[in-house]
Length: 114
Image: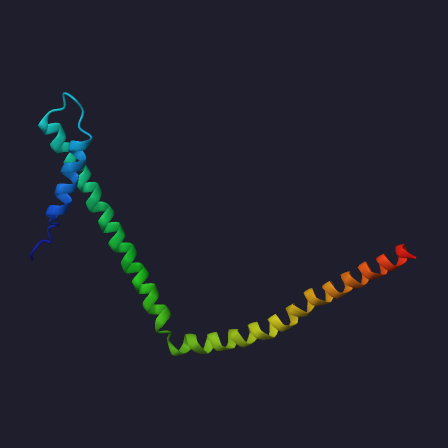
């Protein structure tokens, strides 16, 4: 069985060394700078792993959304028709309240104008 070794890209190593050198303090030894560079390198690797994981999860969700199973499509059709019925009933209430409020406003205005 072959073990999977994480090989760090040269770009990641170079980025880590550049950041470590940029933040280097006066009197800091080369060994300390190398240790800091290794820590930064591990942080970059961890960040890349997380981003790959998030990308995979997003890809899985997108695939599920694009290819619904036949059972899900039947359920969606039923829920869409129910939403249309309930939306039609709900949309009547705001219009009714609007008309009633305007009638009260008009009667108030007529009452105090006379």
